Image (tube, rainbow, N blue to C red):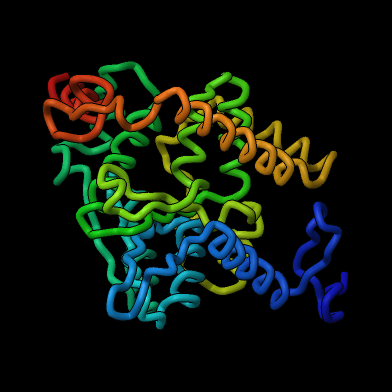
Length: 323
């Protein structure tokens, strides 16, 4: 196969666009989509200046998605005095897994010369995920615990680091899967949160000191293209599945989407595009109904915003440590 752009040997065929692309044009295509998403989402505030730069915290796990995102952001904004990039990695305490991905994260941040912060479950919560899996007091999948703990750390440390934006490496497949899961479950509130968290206008932090606005600049790029980009650019990504991964429902949705994409190229893009419109409508409806942050109080244990007396994170930490 020849590249449709230059005639050189193609490394991939994007069925949804019909294009065959060589190494150079595949990498350029990925970078363009990320930068376009940053521009269209208005990620860089007009108020950011060299004298008063914005801080962008990037969740860096060491996997392909976060490594590619961090690399592109550093290549794009690494010398921009209006932006301070900070990589934030989390060690969950999974023997034989997270150490390797942290090594990859440290190698990448050294090469890119950006600040790198590492936080551990052991230091924050006094537990490790291996312990959680062994005890499992709530009878839940490991990912259910880990998701709560990771979100708490990302949000708290992003705020502590003075972040104006929190960026994560969710790709097109991730977002299309989440869209279908929320739609199939009829979870309108979660749709509204999706818009508020990653798609809505980015307010000043002074106006929203409870939550650091989130962004997902990779969400237009299919997972396989992210992986291929990491390989072609020889990035230090640790591409190994977590040994405790057990999201059975997401796995079913993933397989369904793969089959649909193979039969109907462009399905993932269509799902995400339609979902974003629904999410915006859901967010507007909930705001009109008063279903916003005003309903949140503070956790009696840690002070985090929550609709309960004790936030989900503190409840699960206590359940595990007292098991």
